[in-house]
Each structure stands twice: as C-alpha cells, then as structure tokens.
Length: 113
Image (cartoon, rainbow, N blue to C red; front, side):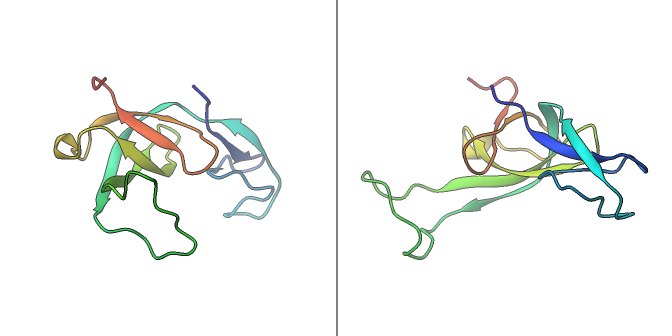
C-alpha cells in the first residue's frame, strides 16, 4: 500500500494534501509529511453518468457508476478519493483505508474485502 505524502508547515504546523512547498496559512516553507493511512468518510457522492469525452476514455466493458468522497485523516486533512466497494454500503463517518495511486487516491471501507 502506497502512503500519501502531504506537507507540513515548518512554522505553524498546518498540514495539507497534496504537498506544497509553501504553507497556505502563513506562506512559510513546508516539508514533506507522511499522512495517516486510515481516516473517516467526511462526505461522498456517486458519479452515475460517464464524463464528457474527450478527455474521458470509457473502458472496454463500458462505464460503471463509482463513488468519490472526502476521507478526513487524523491530521485534519480531507483527501478526495475514489471509494472502492459496494455503493449501497457507503456511510458518512465510516472508517476508510486510503492509499496513493498514479492518479486520484483510492479508499476502501475498513471491514470490506
């Protein structure tokens, strides 16, 4: 599992994701910071129609609805992620494990296979 790397301000300790060289609060320098891999679902929605093409390229098996949401980590950072698993089982406040991918992070409810 690839951990998310954000950044933390060297002066006021504000933590952000994605990482940035400067603090959004005070403008001072920020350093890379490994974020927690478990948080709680803050909010979510389901994308029920295919995005406009281009740039979207539908997969060979066709478009399937998917959930996206914000997972709030203990550091106070809310990370947008694709939510894997059963769309009917998604609940605000549920614990989710989040991981970095080549694009948007992915999150899986803890307790789901």
